[in-house]
Image 1 (cartoon, rainbow, N blue to C red):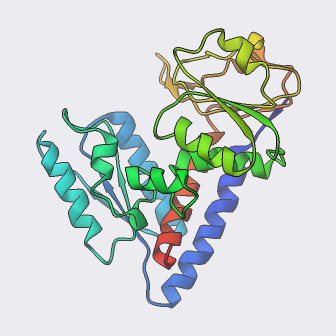
Image 2: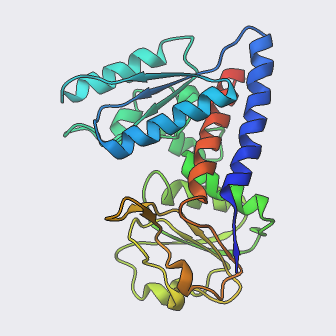
Image 3: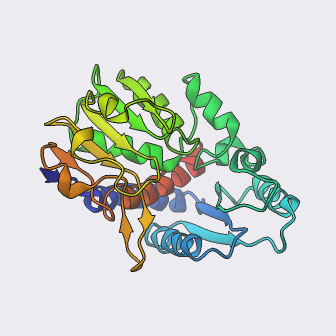
Length: 277
């Protein structure tokens, strides 16, 4: 079993984004990413800091906006104002959000051409119809990992466990565009293991620690673990029990798999937006 190195791919993607950012700088354009952070959640704060560090390394300006209070309109107003600023090329909205506001509702206030993490329903709709759009960075990161590993998707049977708007649904659309045969599983799926054992490629994105074990995989499959579940000792575990799936051809580790590639994809989307989408 091979562990798929997400960190190496992320470094390559960041280098590509840095080269584009440098070209834009010579043309007088400074790529800028703005993050609206309506929460004091520590996990979110850690993620924002990691994005800020990576953006600096690539040559992207980073701006954090923290709306005060719990009124959802403070979040949507901040997103709308950023959408109207010509110096801001990419906008992301972090969660958790105030009560009464969900991510699609917040995403409606981000211009699609600045929606670098695919939060807007317009972005998802464009993705579904084959039009140009930014996909959620995590979903795109899965595609990048599979491409980089040389995993054939044309005609492959791919099973995605999880149907969220930020991973499962957009990932299914991206996989369809690669001509894969896609099955999406969820909490109502009967006999999950019977479905997942058919997969040439299995993507675990359910947010349940070690949900996927030996009985869920077929020998020789490629497994992408999107899960990032905190442990009591401050660590992270994925949705895959990696030690029990030794018969698979390859699996992404947690941490060090999908996570770093997601951040690199996000930065690539920012420079693409600055360049003109």
